[in-house]
Image 1 (cartoon, rainbow, N blue to C red):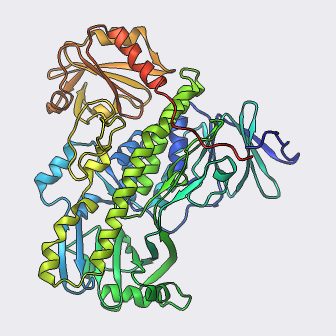
Image 2 (image 1 turned 135 degrees about the vertical axis):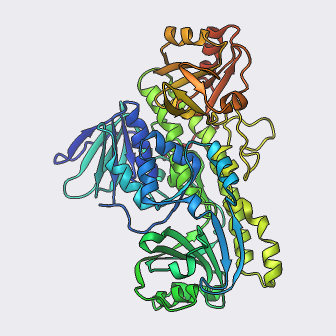
Length: 561
């Protein structure tokens, strides 16, 4: 940021906020929700006048659905999309109407569905990014505002924080204490505050065709999230968007230099590509939009500006290939991690250095997701180019399960891996654990006849979860009603209740509490510490001190001269 503070245009509309978010995609809107829910006045600036009609991301994994549940929009997202359990299959075929080469069931039985349902209060959903955006805008809290159709062009430092100025005949000037850049891959403001991009070698170029057609004659009875097609004309994937409305996405990678001409020149017949993927002419086929883009991973050398007032999130901080569907999910989870920390600092309950833990915790998760997505992309490229016979093709398909079956990656990442440990132990299998750094496990509880989840207990602050011998923690929470400026509650959970009854025994099993021990859960649902209960007040103070004084990330990006 520049040292001098230029004066805003006289004709500008002036808006004040605690946080200004640049970018109204899923990450920026989620940030506004999480911040506003904690009492932080938030303004979102978005260049587009309305959400894009192109689906882009489509899979919302279990962890992100939990966060949408926090916001009270999960049921609407499910209604707007397709429950993944109804399409929990991946199909490979010569054409949609042709020979089936192989299939992989992500949820292959009622028992498998029950196991999946036991580890989270919600299940994954297929719901396109544009629909998620629309729902998040419609349900914004009162102290969050979205201003559409404006382009943020200037970001400057002020004595109290930041100033963002938009372009146009009537500019808008937003004064705030902090800025969150959720401006996507191509946003212009990061470089102006010294956040420099890094990029891995691109993995190829893709063509997306968003279309509507009735494909039920070939999909009924073998409903799948993805239909990979391999024939002489098209080697790509038909992506389920909304089969009930006949909405689909055909995504085709350029596998050879010749295909750059085949797929990306102006005279390409997109209708013929769709029909080649289906294998038969389709009546009523309608193309909505076409997009081509480069697949690869990008990042930033730092996620926070040198003066600390600007932080990047979502695609503005990291992008990776779509193979695995972790782009939108990672961004929304970034916003969740950052939101409570900004609220704590703005309330005066925590020093500004708490914000350094945002990048320290989220960067390793994003980098793991990038590496795994890159590996998936390379595997799929090899598979699409395979000349194996049908029997061999089918035999080898199980090795691709981690691309499509990833509950361990979605729910099992940790912010506190041990020395030499990865942030994700097992991509496919999630093993609930209440160790520090991990997502606090879900267990159903009964509260006066209402069914709630352990994941509901920390929505607006910190929660101490304990068992029958941990009643002392209720007194501690009464004496210390806030932690870093956010509410602290204590919940005693037992097999018999009241007030909270462990309905299935899952709480006792996954939390494994002994005597007066308690688990301290952060506002983002991750375990801060396990507290023995021997000297509870001292243990709580030390746990909070560890997160508040957790140290800065390695040298931040310097401001441009």
